[in-house]
Length: 208
Image 1 (cartoon, rainbow, N blue to C red):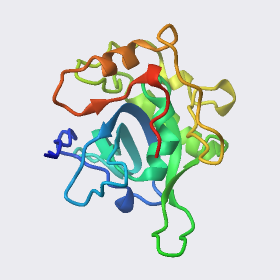
Image 2: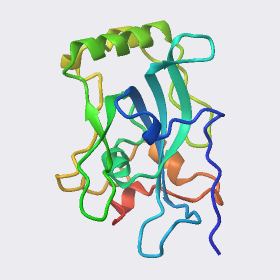
Image 3: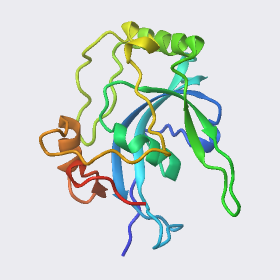
């Protein structure tokens, strides 16, 4: 029997279809390999990428620029492929949500377009981080870590402060060995049973 999983968004959701062309800061929190819905097919993966995202083109409940959404579940295949290798990264991705080209019989996929080469976008992101120095990304099943740096100093695209989305046209990354996996990956791998099959870094990529 297949069961649906709750979407842990804290009340705010950023659905890709609603934020096309929006400028985003994205931290990748978790990967769930199997979480089927009523629309799932047995020949297709029912996986989920879990992210924290800040929409810099929306305002929060206080009217401040930057709508924060915690633990959003994104099920779109292209987004999962682009983000799966970024789980637990300390640096956010600075991207616009876009749409790729449609193919016969398929809808246009959602894609993430890096904006780290755009000084205006980098400046907007850096300003948000400077105004929110206490923000830290979520972690799977545990309390967020203590802030460990000055976001205001990470606004340069030359300083590798921004992570980059994966390139779907390139081969998948090699499997991560137990010695290489990060603390976040170990926490994700050992999270509480019953919340879905979690990302297993040492087992290599999940086939599509």
